[in-house]
Length: 333
Image (cartoon, rainbow, N blue to C red; front, side, top):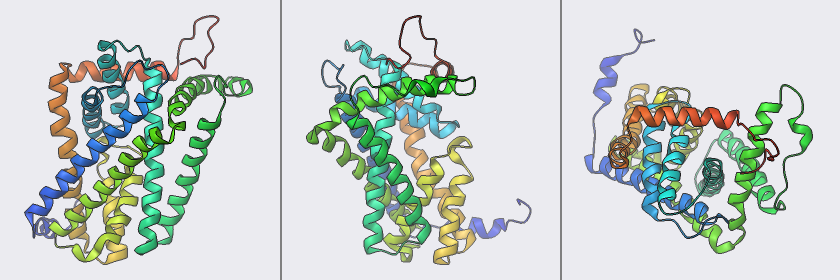
């Protein structure tokens, strides 16, 4: 593949028509991260076991470090890393939240963010043309997330996953971890029954996608691809978001490029070289926030990269195969 690529065409495609639009794209991605932090804060503040509302910085710093880990590592290790750092910061303020409970807040925030993404895609599709596969994918994800959201909010406190799911050699380990995580997810939904509290999570979640949509459009304009329009930027928002949901490689390299190149070349007639150059720079605008700002916050936290990575991988293993003391319910958070 490398031998057949026309590298001279790709290198010549790295030309910017407007540098300031690229700066706007970076700022838009940074605003997206800040809004995501607000959404996560809204979920955490709704925990029944929380004594007082959290400080924004206590969650923003772990969030940025988590982006750093997710950018340079595979398998979403950053999600565990940010939970560990958030737990440490909240412990300093007198809060005693378990890792599983905080991980449950991350899951809930991602579910609500996905629902917000579905609504945005629907709004885009009402006014701008989107291909049929974008509608199908959006509908499937929307139904799944809405079902989880509604079930968790309506479920009675203390209800556990049915015992029959945890029987048998194959399902025992997986279901034991699932029961612990579901209990934490359910606890995170309790506060969201208040409409005002739900709004404090849903509004910044929706704003997160608006900022990412604007960042994609600005990057298209920086490369002289403004004719693709807001509809094309919306389609890229769909394909790239799906690609980032499956972190196969560190930084999701190659997969990210494919998710941007295919719709641009197939639906809008952009040349492969221009599309590839655009995809590389677009990912760079997102990675600039995750790597640069995340590294600064990692220094502020005073934790070594190797140490935090080892702690995150060990905690991930413990979550998959928890040790439940005798007499303690596996579903307890």
